[in-house]
Structure formats: C-alpha cells, structure tokens
Image 1 (cartoon, rainbow, N blue to C red):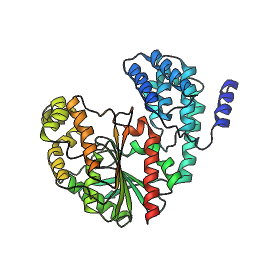
Image 2: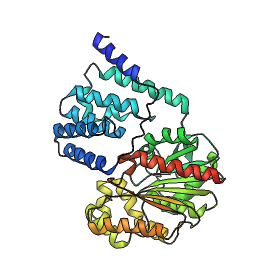
Image 3: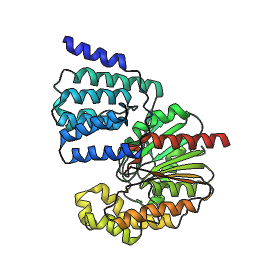
Image 4: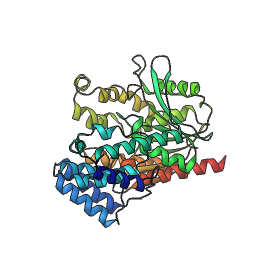
Length: 388
C-alpha cells in the first residue's frame, strides 16, 4: 500500500467511530438552497452544483444533512474534482447510519473515483463499519410465505412495542435504511420494515392484488413472525398511508399511534385527480404495463383502493402526527393545493392529532429533512410507552 493511501486510511480511521451522529435539523433557508444545488446537478451543471453545496455547508458552519454531503460528492465527482468528492464522501460515510451502502459501488456518478487510490481504503472501511453495525444491531432478513405470495421483512428486535413502516408507491423497504439505527438508539423499539407484494424482494400476488387482501397477507406474516398481538406505531410515506389506514381499521386496539410522512389520503384520489396525476402523464393501463410495471401495479388497483380507503375511516381514537410537504409531488397546482388542503382537513377533525408543515421539503420529507421525521417518530414512541 502506497504511503499516501496509508495516510488517507489513517485519517479516515481516526475520525470514524461506529457511526458519528448527525442531528442536524434543516430550516427552510437551508432546504431552499439545497434544492437549488440539486437542480444544478439535474441540469448537468456539476461545477455550479458543487460550488452551491460548498456555500451551503459553509453558511451552516460545515453542518448539513448527511445525504446532501453524498450528493455534493457526486456533483464534484462529475465535475472531475476528486479531492472535493472524497472530502464529502468521507463525511457521508462517517455520518451515515445504515446497514446498506451497496449503491456506492453501483452509482455511476462516482465511477470516476473508482481508480483513485483513496477509493479502496474508504469503501473497505465503510464495509467494516457496516459489518460492526450488523453485529451490534443484529438486523434479521426473512421471507414469509402468506399463501399466494411471499413477503420480505427486515426486523431489528427490541422492546415489545413495534414500529411498523409502510413505504410509498414503487419504493421498497430500503428507503427507511438511514432512519432505523437512529430510531433504535433513541427508542429501543422493535423495528419492522417490509417490501409490499411485487416490490423489492417480495413476490407478486397474482390472484388478489387489492389493498384489503394485501393487508390480510401482512397480518398473516406478522402472526407467523410473532407480532400479531404487539402494540404498534405505524410510520407511513406516500401511498403507504392507504395501507396504514386499512391496517389500523382492522386492528384498532393494537395501533397506538401513527406518523404520516406526506402520506396519501383517500380524499385526494378522486377519479378526476387519478386521471390528472397518473393516467394523463403515463397513458392508458396497457401502455403503462409496457413502460413501467411498478406504476402499473399501482394504477391497476388505484380507483378501487382509493374507494376502499374513503369507505374505511382511520380510527378516530388513534393519534396521528401528520407531516406534509411544502412542495407536493404533482404537476398541477390544483392537485398540490388539494393535497395540502386534504391534510389540513384530515387533522382538523382529529383533536388528538397534530399537523406539521415540512417547510422547504419535497415529497420525500425524510430525505430532505430526516431529523424532523426522526424527532416526531421518537416523540410518538415515547408518548405511547409512557401511556402504557
């Protein structure tokens, strides 16, 4: 190993604990600046993006959201400035709390760094870090047969109170990967993430694909895993709101609280809204099936599933923390306004619940401002446990 490589390895090693906690809570000024830096990158103005990130972090005394440091590394790598890229990538690997970093090796944005002498020691150390995290937290992967299909689960065992995560449409359980360790450290709760039928490592139910049967499959899997009777806090993003609604209505005594993260509400998905946000941009079902099977799986049942959710009110006694984005994911203002008004009206009728506007955030609030989401999940857990 060359001397420069050894020195770099030692520099990273001395600065790296198992995970360096980053509890940075972003404000609107930070988030608006971050969105500008992302837009530069999307427009392939990589140098401008990198410089924008430099000024963003400088304005916050070197602090920032951990994932943003990864994007900064990508921008500088694409701008052919390897020194800056490794500077931010090292910070990201120091701070990120996850069991999954496979994307580092697959991300084409970082391809120019692969032959750099600093790549091997840094990525080797990240693998070692993850190995130590797995030894400490012991996440368990399992595939559960629920009859017509199989569901993939990842479980970190903790207390008797379970935090169950519901992903958004087209996502799989890995979207929660950078939140799990901080939540576990703060709560000690049992954490359960899973891939819904047809996504990630779960197989597709080709017989009964409607939401009620999907929830029945989830219930069967949780029973087989020994968590059917456990008290639960539901955390849901986007389309996961539908699943949280149906699961809670079927298990009202076991769901003690919920945290919605820009979650889908049945009231929004009228036939007219579905046409604007789904079929108009993507075409008829036959075309969607050819172009994107993941969107097709959502589209084929969306009318029926939305009607089911509208007919199944979320139990009134369950407190909800509803975090909604300042910038919803839709193209038309009528839909963005309808989305936000729907959340306000939903919580207005629930005096035991609260609503939080995630200023500066897009639909993926937990990516834009993870500490905001973490804080509310932890508060919800603490309130539930205190009441037991």
